[in-house]
Amino acid sequence: MKQLWYSMAILAALACCTPAAMAQTPASPRTTPPTQTAPSSSGTIGPVVNLWYAGLTTGVAGAAKSGGAFGGEAGVRTWRSLDVSLESGWFQNAVRSESLDSATTLANYLQASQGKPAGSNVKEPAAYLTINGRWVFESQRKWRPYGIVGVGGARVSHKSSFTLNGADISGSLNQYGVTLGNDLSGHTSHAAVTAGLGVLIPWNKWYVDVGYRLTSILVSGGAANVNRLNLGFGARF
Image (cartoon, rainbow, N blue to C red):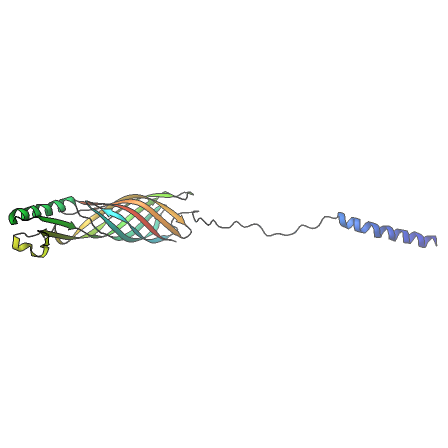
């Protein structure tokens, strides 16, 4: 009987101690997946151009007079921070002061010979195509400055108009003894060079390009230096 009571006491003690022991046993650590850093939504990590890019440009451009500018470009990253691109575009008016002066001289002749007020105007829209080299100063900053140079060609249209006593006589100048040269009529083709500075702003796969470019069209007797404030938008890959 004592042995039975002794065995029951041992079982009771074990029953009381087991929950306490289980409560003090540290739980096995949970296995949690490692925290992953989400890619930056700013898209500014890494180079501006991984392989190639393409975009459209617009802005204001002009030499003696100003007008609009439109174009497009596509390029490829060739070495370190050097991009080589092909750019094509159009200037609304690349007229030089020399062309305006020549037209004014003819208008003065018409006024003196006809005894009536005369006037003139010249517009020279130009299409261009250049091969550019662009060096981008890569960094972790959001803004990436660059310098660009290019060589190519341009085709200039010479559009002159003349009035006499308020009437347009552009199509009948011969009857007044006036013959226009190729600086005031027709089309001419010339070599062109470009240089400029700007800033690239990458955002995910897109970019914004803000800058200044000078395109010098090497016309006969000088150059039409077209200053351009450039705004571009495109995709980078």
